[in-house]
Image (cartoon, rainbow, N blue to C red):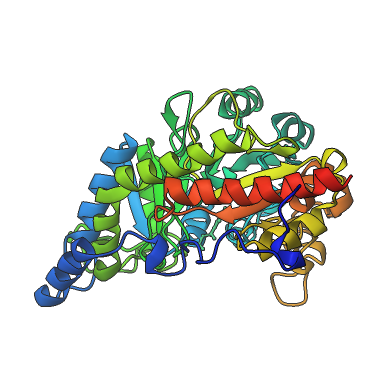
Length: 420
Ligand SMILES: Cc1ncc(COP(=O)(O)O)c(C=O)c1O
């Protein structure tokens, strides 16, 4: 007989809560960070161009990634804005991106007066689908901004091939994918510029922070100038009459740099812990009839497990997603349905084209065309949003946590299958 579910008054599978990225339970923050932060404070050098922590962080992250240039900024959103700015595009130019991501993916496009155009996603991964990207290319397209969602790389071989054939820049949004590799290559090193986030929920964190990585000296120089008001830091001149462009201030401070540096030194070990527990869960889910574990591309060499995903075969289990979601929550399993709850392409400001005053700039002529954004045009992304169960994985998750999750999933799956 199937075990009684917690939702029907039976015993819960998990009595204790799982580690969370929101607090110390799922974060590797400790003495190393405290020591470097103390060093900064004792030195009295809080500004990146007075101290050395941010510079050292940039150097060590560049070594980790195996790329020439890394620039630290204040957030993932800032890194994407700076990356788009570094391309020096014109108002109304189009950038193809994902219909499901964080707002930070889109803000830099529109703040650079460019227009986001959306490609559909692979429903099983919510990563952008290369065939759909190619269909969205127009004579105004200048770049593809790929989003490596949940810690798995997009299909970069195919995407880079499309970019090459159509002469497009590629920016990689790796906010959720520190350390992920495809065909053995780190995300953030395929395209022209890679962007990372150090926000609280990411594989490594400084609370907030961002990284821009590039192999191209001219993009690095433009990004560095843009993020620092186009000031000349060489010390050659105090004269600011020659400031060449309107930039911004996205400079990382030394305290943040100290935490980011300590976290970078732990990145390999953090990813190993995430992988050991997540891969155990993949293995166990494979043995449960009616539950499909995360879809991993054959060329994904390292998933970096920002979120763990699975879907259920509703017909085989005789249960709908919503009922299954309630039952596993009652068991104490932390998974919820979907990612952000809607497709970002359907967000009010994007649909209504609201960025600058009461104009529709840059979406309106003479700068750009006026594309209509409709969630119905993205069935792959919509399927994933309403059918993928997701949970924020952390380095605090152990193999035992994975085994407990699998036990609860099996219990719920067996129960509904037996009631069919
Ligand atoms: C895919 C993606 N892009 C961009 C961002 C923006 O990063 P941040 O929150 O550091 O500005 C995030 C973070 O939430 C993200 O998940």
